Length: 309
Image (cartoon, rainbow, N blue to C red; front, side, top):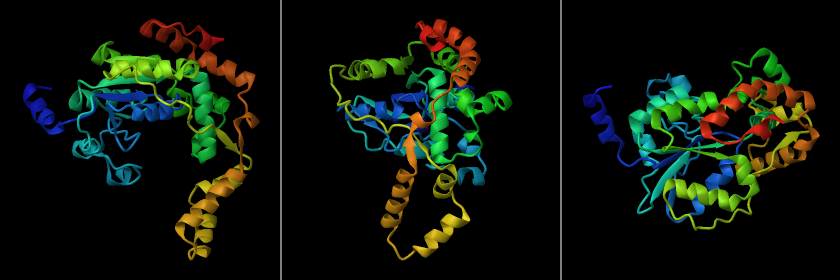
């Protein structure tokens, strides 16, 4: 891209994030986002997971855009997320799918926000995959509800649940494009061990007062799984039964209907301990991730041997 084509884009972007959490899902990013929001020198987007950098939304078909949870599809839309920022030293958001969509994300970041500090939070990929699998069961998410063994055997090269844990493969393009000084890597294990010390490292990396002590007593919601999957499917997805129930209850206020639905979901939920990761699943997943983990160790200069035992 020539300088003449870059200039209009740079002029158009205006004030954009000074930092972006690029990954990964199910590695504590919701809690970290909350702790970042407590810092008086940090301004966060009102929307988490915009995924603005993950796809070329400006070129997407209308039917694709219609499915977007948050219609942040242009650079102008994205800039508006930070319009309320005043004198904060750090401005940011979290789109933890960026690592999965690294090919597009690197290109769009170079185009729109080349100076943005990038943060990657990594978790043992076996545990991360298991956690997302449970989330997909809870939320009745399509084909990804297949067992982890089935995903390994039939669609390992297509399963987002599995591919998100290929950290070396996903992270290396960011480090090559932006340099190691612009990409900070943190481990979920350190967050679990000492959340305050972890967050103070994050604060330091984004250029705000690292002596600030956040309240880390509140944790993100713990994973739960349905007792009855068929009932969960009825309550979580659009279907004739749910539509009929809504029609019958149309005289009831929307807030009351949502409360009733949530109580039914809670009644049908149980601890993730009811569906533990089996020894076979753990061993198969460790074998699947082994080469990537060994390469990642060298890339980020951290001992990750615990992920392989």
